[in-house]
Length: 119
Image (tube, rainbow, N blue to C red; front, side, top):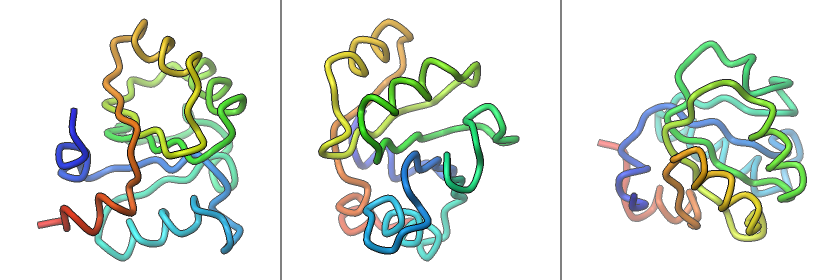
């Protein structure tokens, strides 16, 4: 899994504070929307991952790792891939994703938007 692969997907879920303009989750959400991606936001706009009625192609973790692992463990939805933003990583999250055979990368979606613009 590479950042280029991730940016070729269409549906992203941003897991973090997407309501506060000073937060990276907010910036990522708005940048993805401006670039033409389908974006869902948890937990500030949609309470749980299971409440999303679409396929989760990419889950972008922009949240404290303690909360991130909680949301991952609560969902029954299949997640295509996970991007772990700087500061959202933990060994527990990586182990959990490996156990679930969910591909992941540690990267920044904002960088991905710059390097690999949507076609």
